[in-house]
Image (cartoon, rainbow, N blue to C red; front, side):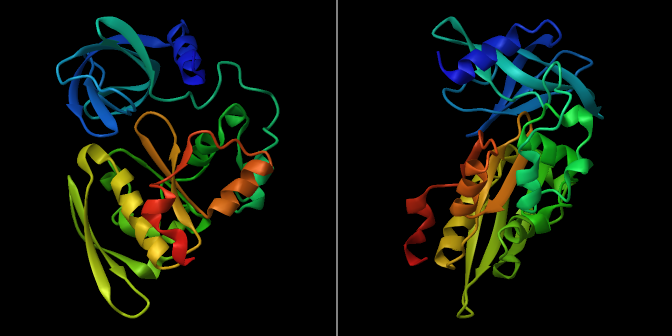
Length: 279
């Protein structure tokens, strides 16, 4: 059984989590939206692998959180769906903290400090001692407050958290001057790339369902063309939270070697697509 399968089963078995029936209402390449019974608001979760179909019945397991005007909130960790008539558990998020948080700070907090992602370890309250690195950063920093440090995070309704998501992602890589948002609609973004020779190129990307992965991939491609060192990394923060880190591959490797857990941290796109041959 895969590690994530064990995690999904362990979470599914936790008696302290809320289990609710739901119905799949919307799909995108990396998200699904699920309607839950009243008074709970619909949820949107990250999704990998074989997708269910719109209208499929599922069961979710999660913990209550702050909701929105649509109803009571639920942070979903596991979705039970069916594949070939057999129940299947899909891990969609990890809890920010364990059921019994440790009493001392994680030793890797100092790695975040040394790499400029935290001002100091004292900013991390004791109730986050059980959180993973991205959970700590999302809890300590407001959405764009740490973009000069190289980190941003948004709710999947990211347009409520930022006026210019292109600028936010450009800043975390140190190339704010090279990108400009030209137009934004709920399902599509258009941005401009400014080359060193003064020429410009336009890109249009789809952001259906709040998915910003394609934007990160295309910006990484142009960062390669610009000869930038840093890239945009997608950091799985669980549930409907979108988190992005701006660091070079060597910086990420160094943080991992220093003891920082980097599970769920992936480069947006791949080396061939990003075209690093010019660096």
